[in-house]
Image (cartoon, rainbow, N blue to C red):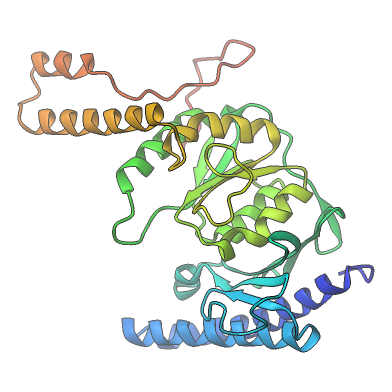
Length: 330
């Protein structure tokens, strides 16, 4: 990293590297403990806690008066009333880590009076440090990064995260995913939101959306996005999204197109939009039961096809598409 970093960002980078070293060492042992689910869970919990402790120790040694909001320990450490709060995810992508799938990271952000001003996302498997200070741009290692330049959603690679906790609303998510898939060149689900956001900031993917997120999943990534020239907010396009559990990001053009598609699925959507989504879910359930209760006769097909269903709005290209070539595989 360059030596002209903001002093607080320098400390965050040092903390992220300390956590990354622990994670890389643990990655060598993870194979040995994958014998039972309990053993694996205990091991990952140990790694999470050790990485978080290393981060907190580094930050509070430098800034004992600062507050801490961390995934494992919450607000247990640090000052309780500071305007400076470090928001930490010691290991984002634990399921990937358990399986040896090399997409996980350390995420550290500093919020000052509720606004993120410093951010580090560290990818320990590739030794890449993504960093940003407010007003100074976003970097990977020493190289300046910018969001991608694609203006048409149908040419874009979009990343997402699947809901996985019990009680998560899977059906609306699948509808949402279906709409986005029909409008873009491909959807990816790498499995670590903080690193997904870093990839959008670096232009490796063109956009990102997910629900069910916590502040430590998105705090650092949000500053990387804005400092790389992108936009980030909730599904209706509001920028105050950190505590709202839903997130969409991309360059300004792609962000706008994603918000146009995802807005009706937001918990902050208007009553009309929510009714549209409810109707679409009802229709899909009706179709499913109709399919199950018949032998596939023509009569059923025509009856089903007359039902109003939520159609993805395809973004019209400025020139006619060549229909002789198939769509890219997802």
